[in-house]
Length: 129
Image (cartoon, rainbow, N blue to C red; front, top):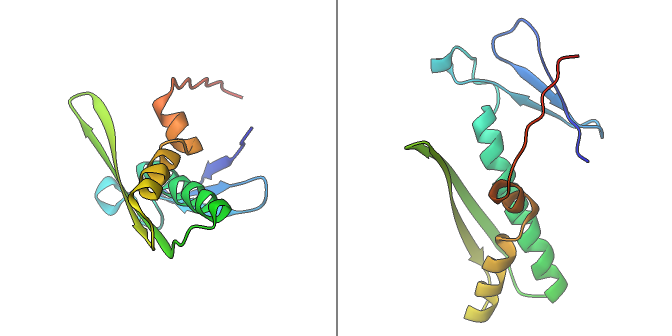
């Protein structure tokens, strides 16, 4: 289970997000939405989760296989249109890889934990405390 705590005071719309391990991330809304643009917007954080998970998962797999990979670049675009949310993910693999390795790493990217979460049924249970 992952558990974070998010809180907002009176400063519009600066949100402090804390992990159980003590890490802190600041989220905010952009200026045009009344925020101060001091951090990632909630939607940017969502897209960032997919990008970060993809990078880490592909890197872990490549290291286990001892494949020559210098860098992994992932661009994620979140597009909302016609009642649908779409993530457009581009992965650049920098290194000495053949076509079979590249194909395998694409399959690994599609199996990263955040990708799995986003492509399966999601339920949000909310209670007031």
